[in-house]
Image (cartoon, rainbow, N blue to C red):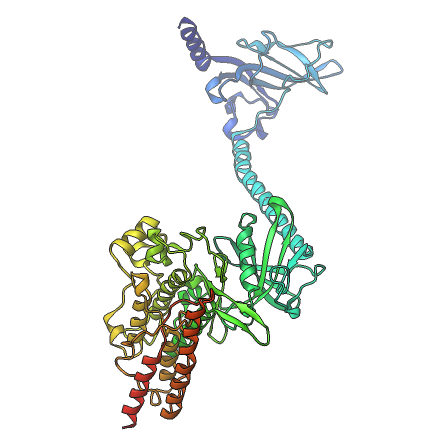
Length: 594
């Protein structure tokens, strides 16, 4: 403790000490006014100032020592004093002012009062290498300028270096992408599906990768770039290396028989991998759609009712095709099994320039090949706000129909998004685009919040009363509610494609296709058709219509009996057939003719 007290006393003493020194300045006129010590009466006829100066430690940085100094010249024995005054430095000076030779100027410092009144030169004394020399003390103005420059120039310099470094990295990365060659390529017709042959889309390994231009989207598995391949734009989906299975899964779906040719499924060009281990990059190259996804489009645009119906119809057609079991047929002689998307949402539906739908992103899709089990590794996946109640509950039936009904629940939510931004809906489009349940739970709902809202409260997106009263949008609302029913078994997904097709044609030619008010109150006939329906064309002539119904029944009933008898593994899901709806439409036509 005594050591601390003594140390504190010494520090206090050092902080408050002062020293008296002789002061001399050989040219008083050039000295800054604010640093002048001499008064006018103390200046001699040569402009020199000779007086005394009180040196205070508080004027300098802590830790510096107060000293007196002298600097002079010795020219052939003639002594010329240049400066005298206060001097501060961190290292101690001697009690007597013994000079050290520094080039042509002599300098000495001492730490006693008026010790610089006498000074001595010792030629044999040399200055140590680390001893501070007679650095002239900067004026306060000069010191302030240097401080400002330091605080200004240093950050600017560092920022400039950082910008140059970032630009260099960008150029290096861009150069790397533009010159790297494809290490391995998987295309339609490759080992993933030896039965599919599409030579027009084969890429040779020596062809360079597309030139990446701009990032268009980021997702769970990676990012999507707009890129240029030869003379056309393409989309490049770059997967993280840990998502290799999703990359392979998308290729497997794209290589499925007939998928490549469907207009409402994203057109696959090629897949490429480059690098090894953790540095590997997995690329999926597809056609590019400038309008982007439905979700992005609805953020800044609205749709008229005819456009909305056209888009819904093509969206339903694409999903119907995925869900459908298509047996071996000419000319391809291939088999297309039913496919469940499992992550259907507006972000994964792209828009062509003709305002038709293109379904994309098959990283979570699952194929239902007869005789093969889907397994229990396809559980709670997808985007939370689009998850059906049974997924949120974790009570999934791992059967084909269960997965297809899950897609239909998400399909209904996408229909709702389109209706909210339909300019022809009663009251007009909503001012801003809203995702399903965004009004209730915000943009990033948790799983617990979704379970409480969708399962416990059985809540669904708001359907306005004015929508229900509209003769076209009202039917769309009923279709939506059929598809998002809480009970998966009760979801009436049959004839969705045909309903929308009929509504679309009614809007385009309202006098030709009257709407029966009870067209949705139909009996469900199970015949093994696709979950959505095949989009049967409804003739306007009664005779043609009756012939079509008779032919359809004659074909379907034996087929159904034959399937039940043979108990084949290719039996599709139980779905609805639109015979009753067709009959009601016919009745409506007859009423209008009367």
